Length: 449
Ligand SMILES: Cc1ncc(COP(=O)(O)O)c(C=O)c1O
Image 1 (cartoon, protein in one colour):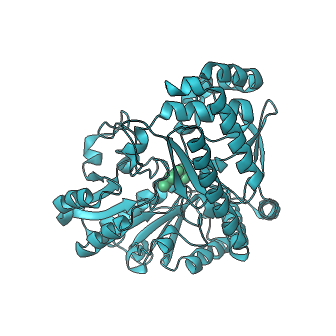
Image 2 (cartoon, rainbow, N blue to C red):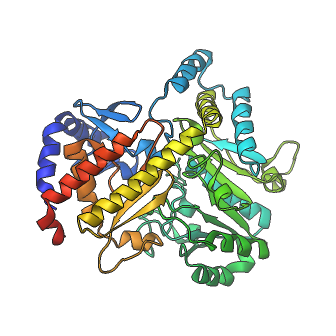
Image 3 (cartoon, helix red, strand yellow):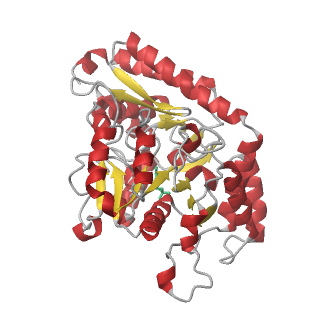
């Protein structure tokens, strides 16, 4: 696919963004505040977001399939949430004290996901997973944590391993071996190989942390029996299963993926959707584990597991947005019917279209999450992160960039897409039309990509 023309188009329509990017690079490393938000030649700079649209500083209005890192299940800035926020701002933004709004959100989560017998809120998912593994180590008094290759649990140092291809190479400098020596990686969807690795560390295995659907690594659903097998192993060996539901919690139903896959994790993490568009993370679990975090009335710090919070944890703004969002989802289960069926429609129609265009793809996903993988001789199936990494990601980037440059359709390049309540069928049809045009115009080139 000839990308140059699209780069030209993009540059012509994002002049102010380019200027901002020059400024931004002076202030922030790489001009960004999250590694994945950069894409070539420079990202556009958003000034407004409403419903399914992002508007950049040059006035381009994009249909957004990225939805704030897949957090915005109701779309950008839904009215009922912003109305409640306006009222809450008048009453205060950060109390820095115990407050009732946290109880309302906590109770809502607990009713929807009864295994959240106890919850601790934080401000990011990265903190929540960091606390989750600390709790697992505290409960079991063991040291090893097993994680999946390609599994993404945020930027905490312990779990920043085997995230990006090539997986055996450190995720950058500054991560020291001593810190990571008790993390072991396992292959998603390969139970036999995973169990062999787990077996070799079982006496010192505190927990297994896994996303029920591999999100950042390619929107990959688990094979039947894989997650159950990990759970079973954990049970038999006095280790804990930690399910990272930061993407999947409240994404497919008013519950978690644990409900769909009938899992009973000892600890699980939530984030994204439960913050209603504001920063959040949560570590949740059975009382027998979570009570280790209770340091009240304990005079000796050897008696409890010290986890956050933090300055902004359970702030009334986030709590209000999260509670309002979950309340709406609870009252309106049709939201899930709608977004899940939009996901089905996109997966089915894109598959048909690519078949017709004779382009070899695999569309993965479940419910409202979906991702296109361009297959090649090396990769025919998408079962794990490595499969996804070895597909034709150059073509995927060029395709998603073309969507941005010419059709004002935004996926964060190389990442899966998500539907929100603000999307409609017409958005799927727009995506299909644009996809057809992009590939028909570039047929000869694609054959050689
Ligand atoms: C599965 C999963 N866990 C943890 C995180 C980290 O959350 P945060 O970005 O809020 O720190 C993410 C973020 O994308 C995620 O997808």
